[in-house]
Image (cartoon, rainbow, N blue to C red; front, top):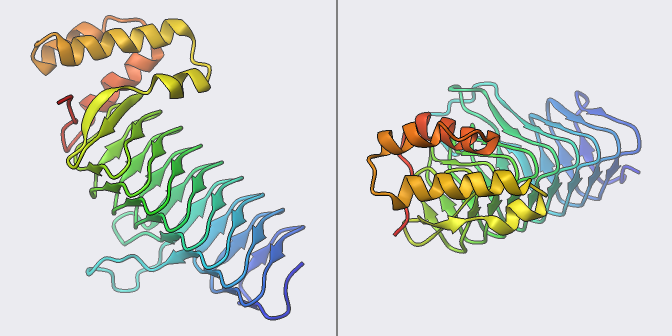
Length: 254
């Protein structure tokens, strides 16, 4: 059902069985997938929204990037199927640098969380209340960003990682790790998250071995990487690749 008080631009493409609540405004260049439910007082423009997404009251999706160099260049935000966007969430579209902000499938953005321009958010990511990802942040699949967390621009949070409440993330967080602190430092591994995703015990043990070698052996990073590359594990391979591709440097334990 589309409420009679909603305002919808003539360019909008709406799939089957979509609900749009009262006083919602949907502007130019929007595609809404079938089965989506959009609440009241929502503002959407320049967005492609997947199937069965839920967008709650007063969210803003596809709004211009908060970037002083932005001069109205065409860009969009892409949101995967099954993603939930709660009240007062803000998801900005990209800048001319990449032209898009990308959000994966089955993500959950809690109240007043924020994703800035040109971010890449994986599948099954949770961002809790008042957390914020600055421009060009990358967050891997299955990561959990706790409440009141701020992630510095261009920083990466690896697959399956979890941040502590109120952490200031200024360096890259390796996959499957925990981090916490005013300038976030590693605080062990996200063993609970790995268990919830039913990661095989052999993979969990391999990640434990890799973490020990990286951060407890006192080896130089290049030597530790060379050693853990010998471990036969997909998860460890992900950690190795993540570290090798890090541009900001990785967070370490206290």
